[in-house]
Every structure is written in C-alpha cells, then in structure tokens.
Length: 507
Image (cartoon, rainbow, N blue to C red; front, side):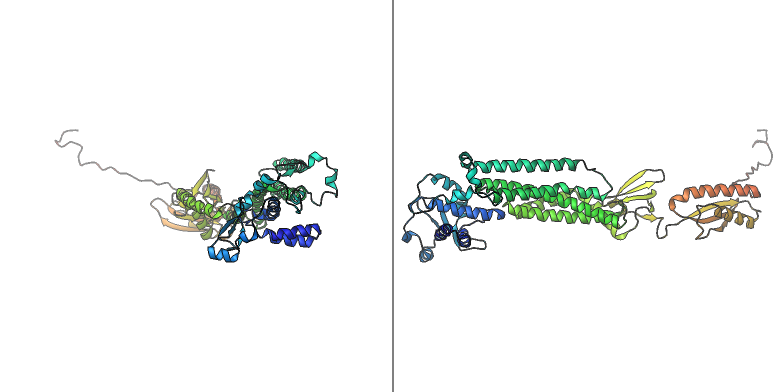
C-alpha cells in the first residue's frame, strides 16, 4: 500500500523515474513465481493496479490490527488475510525470496476476479480514480497521440477486460499475419521434397523462420502496442510462444540437415558411405540435443514439471530399449564397422557363407551387398560383425586372378610358358604391374599342370578377365599345336583260364 501511494503521487506529478521505482518496489510485494517468466512484468503491473483499485474501494483494518514483525515472531504467523476479503499475505516457503511476506500466488491469480466483483463499488474519498482502466485501455507508441480521442465511445467500452478497439486490433493483426504465414507455407510446399542441392534444403528454413518472426512481432504488438492485459494476454502470449517453440524446433532440425549435407559435400564423401552415416548421426544428435534443450526451457516457461516428465520418459526409454534390442545391436554393429573399418562402400567382400559382391552402402543398421547376379543382399550389422569377411579390395585394390591349364606330356614347355604370357599381356584387363607370371604346379596323371597368375584392376573384372584370357589361351594353343589333354583311363579286363564253367562244361 505504501508503495502504491508513492506510485499514485508520482503519476500525479508525471515523474516517470519515480513511477518506475515505485512500481518496481510494489511489484516485489507479490509472489509471481507461478506466472510465466515473460509475463511477470505485465502481471506485476496489473496486480499492483488491480490491488490498489480494490483497496481504494473497501474498508481496511486499523493499522494496529495488522501484525508487525514482533507479532509475527511471537505468534509464528505465516499467513494473514485482509478482513472480509480473500486477499492473503503469506511467508514464502521456498525460492530466492524464502521467508519474505508477499501477496500469495493464489491471490495474484484471483485478483482479476476480485476486481470484477468490486469494480462498481464507489471509490473512497481522496483517491485517484480510473488509473487501472487508463492503463489497460491505453495504446503503445506506434499509435499517434490523441488516437483514443478519435475513437467512437462504443469502441472504448470494455469486454472481458479489453476495450472493443483492442479486440478488433488483435483480430486484424492475427488474420493479416496468419495469411502471410499461410502464403509462405504454400510456397514452402512447392519446394522439391528430394533434392541433391543443398540450396533447396536451405530454402526450407524460410517458412519456420518467417513463422518465428511473426510470432515474436505479434507478441510484441499485442502486448506493448495494443496493450492486451489479464487472462486474454496470458492466453494469446502462451499460444504464440507455443507456436514459436514448435517452429524453432522445426528450424533447428532443418538447419541440422543443411549442415549435415554441407559437411558431406565439402568433404567429398559418398552419401552411401559409413562416414556420411556417422556425420548424419552426429549432426542429428546435436540437432535433437538442441531441440531437447529448447523444449526443456519451453516446459519451464509453461510451468510444467519438466523433471517429472523426463523421469517418466527415462522409464519408458528403458522399456523401448528392451523391446528394440535387435535394433540397438545393429546400431552398435554399425559403430563397430566404423571404428574397425573392415570394409568400405565399393569394396568387394566374400562372407564365410559364400556370398560375394560389392559393398554398395554401409549404414548404421545394415550393410547392402550387390552380387555379380545384380541381386541386392541386405545384411544386419549385428550379423556381419560376427562372421568371417574376406575383403578382396584391401589392402590393395587390384585383384589376383589364377587360371589353371594343363598341357600334354611331351609338349614344348618353353612355348607353353611364352604363349601363356602373351595371352595375359594381350588382355587390356590385365595390369602391367604387378607383372603376370607363369608357374608349373605339378605333374598330373594326364597332364602337366600350369597356372597363369595375373592381376585385375578391380575384383569385379575377374570374370571377364578369366573368360577372355582363357579363350585366347585356347586359340593360341590350337595354332601352335599344343594339346590340352583330357583325363583318360585304360581299363583291361582279364578273364579266367579256360572258358568253361566250374563243371567243365560250356557256360
């Protein structure tokens, strides 16, 4: 009451600095802990003015009936009510102002109801009248001086705590800027959903950013310029803040996606490679962390028990982890492949189960293998990390090819070796380095067994190389009369002595 008296005196003298000082001190007499942080300034001013309007219309108890510090200590008073009202002053049990006596949070919440009940009561003699209505029906600096004087009387009438012109102004602003956001949304939907260009991904940021700016502007215009107050201001501000947080989270996710592909493209990393998957994973983890922090603060802003919510989410997370253990095993298998690097995208590998093919993509959950039959095999990472893998592309990308051939005994071995080397050198698929070589392996039952050793540039050239070189060997051998024998056996059947049966008679 003392501070509001100073506020009234300062308003009569039009002393802005004194008004601000008195107002700040008066606001500190209220427990605003249950009010959203961004609304505390407005709620504090409105609480001060409403309370003063109430006290200027009711009979207050004599000063000696109000408990002082000595009475509070002696009788351990923690809560006191202004007689014949529901206005309470209580000791703050917790928070930064623990122990201070303030108008309780419940009182702050119901001051607008108390004011509506007594607003038609007459003022006491000698008090300044209409200061609260002057405040709530006023406009901001964007409106010209004397704006209120040009309005018809019906537009100055109050409805649910706001003047009619304030309702009209709020509706017009929301409709206009809502239509602007709708137009940007229509443009946003015309963007390609799948595009290799990072510029298109960047343009997707336009809609959430524009929507965020509109939310900020509307909140400022409706609060500071149109000067909404009370529960209407709370509802509008909470709604705009809710949409702001949604669009901010959306913008963070899009920005994370743009950053991800900018890093991948600048590093010349194939999008299907595991490195790209890891970069995507890290960027998404950062994005989701930022969204988590954003909504954590949003929960605190809206007065939600964020700690309890996330504690419940932790219990649910354990249940989800148990249900998705195979997915987690595949994920950690992908991490293992990334750390060990047994193969990369583009390598030719052979599994112990016999599958052979080119690794097309290594993801965080599975690895895709394309066989020479152009069949795509998808193998869970939890499986592929527990089998024997032969990487034919590592440590050197060239692949050794062995072609076995047998020649008949009595052949000119020098000529055989010369023809095999010429057949290898004439094939463009055979690398010059390492140089091809011919080795005599063994003397077989029907042939002298040779082996031509040469190298292909890539493992998937092996089939064509063997085919072309084998045809060339066969052609050259025919030209030079080199025989390629086939296995043969001579079977001799020896009969018994004599041609008669056991009894000496013909059979």
